[in-house]
Amino acid sequence: MLSNRLNEVYKLIKEGMVVADIGTDHAYLPCALVTSGKCDKVYACDVAIGPLKQAIKTIETLNLTDKISLVESNGLAKVSDDVNCICICGMGYHTVEMILNNDIDKVLKYQKIIIQINKNTDLLRKWISDHNLLITDETIVYEGNKFYEIIAFSNEYHDTYSEQQIILGYILPTLMSDTYIKYLENKISKYQLINEDSQSIEIKNEIIMINNLLNKHL
Ligand SMILES: C[S@@+](CC[C@H](N)C(=O)[O-])C[C@H]1O[C@@H](n2cnc3c(N)ncnc32)[C@H](O)[C@@H]1O
Image (cartoon, rainbow, N blue to C red; front, top):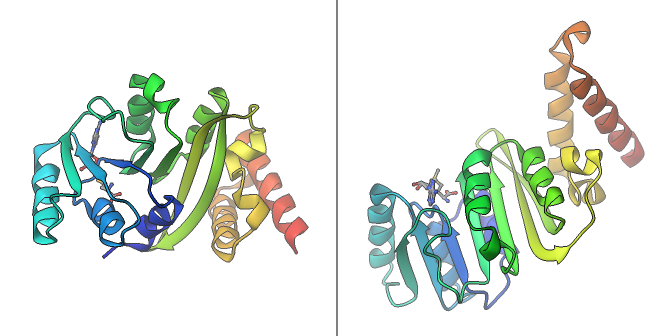
């Protein structure tokens, strides 16, 4: 039932964690977590009625009402205190930033926060860096003609990250998976469509960083 994107998120959740899926929509992730037995209790949270109705439908169809609690919540506002892992997937960076900033005290208590945003992952890493938090996992998947980066962090301390780590990743460049290499090559191809004179300093710097990384890997 899970897409490759949500399956990567699923894999990052440790057995027995008490998870809140923020912006759950159809509740596929919570259902997969309890169906497989990885988690005993999951909170499926959403701010909007339509998605909550969609979630109820999935949960009832799969007979999982005793294991999944549905919560109408704007971000983390109504998330219960027993939660130790949150997932926020399929939203834009600015919504995620607002959710994290609105309840920063809660964020700093969670063991694991897993975020999948469709773009602007550099802004997310900058946020993590500014809060001195440890990036614990980074993966990338290619699905439906798009690359999706998934970033997880914990409440452990980490120094601020370098510019390259913020832009290209902290763990992804140490793994150099085939998908990540394709992602880097794809970025270069897109930048090459821009006339060199029109390329910003940031793009020129990024091209240099990517080429260095790719050359080191060869
Ligand atoms: C595109 S869906 C993503 C569904 C699922 N997480 C996924 O990745 O496939 C985004 C969901 O986030 C919900 N959402 C947006 N802002 C939210 C907020 N501040 N708090 C909780 N949910 C929110 C929307 O109602 C919607 O159901």
